[in-house]
Length: 525
Image (spheres, rainbow, N blue to C red):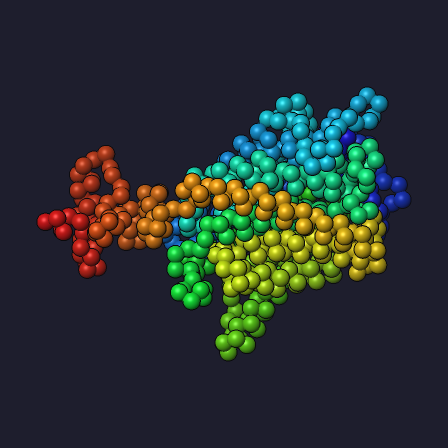
């Protein structure tokens, strides 16, 4: 792992020299006493912020689904962290960052396959404690990629299927893409050198891929896995009418949805600035982190604004009504955040404004494409927000990378196009890898009957069907009654005290009678 850190510093040396005001001589990170501990603290704290994004995803998802499925979707988000940590421990970190150790003479002995996937540190075997900070920080990224899919398959996915998917994505699919771009041995990495390459080339297209915080490994992987899952699973019951036209199915709480947006926005300040992995060592580290924080803010802000106005104009010209859509503005902010994730350290602030402004309409266009053309039901627009805006972020890096930051700068800034070529190849490779692995996987679990819940569970709601009642006690079916085969209500919750069961049955029966519904007991009488 020490060799990886050295290569990473080389990349940062190139990056830092492009920021105005840097000294000619850059201080090595090891020359400041206690720098490694300070940087570890910075990275750990950033990881805590990224982990807090799980709260944002939970609130975002809860608000976007109907009330009868709120418990279910929140539990799925909780289990992303639980199962994801186990999967990352077993193979995830090893496949992503299990690079070969250096020989005594400084050379490496490795196979060509290590340009594709790592092969050390399984279950943390031989992993030094000094690398635990990297393990934790990268785990939070893997968990973020995995939780994206929960929204796309919401309201109709089996609990067991989601657990299997979680292991597949965090143990294999995400780590491979992370290795490609963030390991100095990865075939797409900008940190490769002749010592770490056995390809016919050293840097992909002469430049390598510059993806600072994960537009490819996190957002495109999560978004494309969402596409595969939602397409194979099929739409929710009633989402399309007999003619194939979409039927609106709004979430039950715009307030929860936007609360989730703000939690995610807050967590992104760990996601992007924290990806420096250091804050001291030479003046450049703090300057890079500060620039990234500003670009992150501007990307989110302009994404929300551009999406809000885009949807308003589209609605006005199609219906004649002016609508300022709160939920779509929140998705626009998320799209802006996704769009700026990859280029955040390589572009100037004015470029961040352009990138965010384009990310919002790109997301909205992808959303319309998914729903009206592909007929894919994605309750949270996870595909559009993460895959669509993520791909745009990689293109934006290749377009707006400022001269002197990455060595091959953007084609709009006078570059020769090598960075764009590398990023297009990387995007296509992610499409092929994620869809090529996850689509057959989802088809397999669908074939064996483990993917989708029964229709009656979906109609009744997964909270009642699987989680002993709804998330809201004031709801009529809060106690978990559900309809039997004969259409009569039957209690789904039992108590240790038989008297409590009797009291519950009488209360449910009385409530149903007031609603004009006959209970099962009344029918039998």
